[in-house]
Image 1 (cartoon, rainbow, N blue to C red):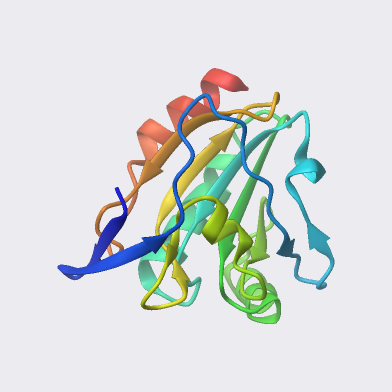
Image 2: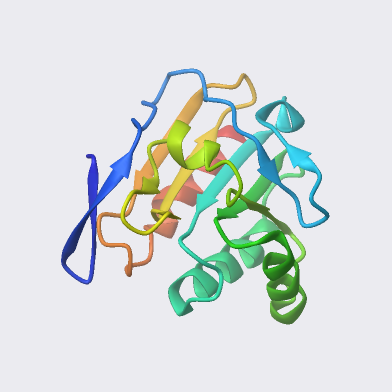
Length: 167
């Protein structure tokens, strides 16, 4: 799928989404302290990439808070990372306000390498589509879920089942 909708309006995605079984594409994202994060920083872990348009929207806020809550029941072999094009400073402020500590927030605002490499960059908005990508400890894509309507929540149960299979 190379399109998603926002309140019914079609939007185009830049890049191709990697398929289950493929090697996960690398990325360069900014942590809240502006230090770079790459795929290799999570090697050997189950990496859950939660792609959201903006933490400052109700659905994204609810989704990341839900994953933060679910993280407590997951193995320490699992890392959950919320990725958006929000500035790292805004992400840090949001985490403090929301009390989110079990989910790491990373910004794709500078290079949009994650969005392009994972086929999730919305061309018209320069925001990320709502998606969940689970990377296995061996670096392969184990699960993907692209939410067709940006304003809808993902299927949490399906994503959590895929995560628990690997953990």
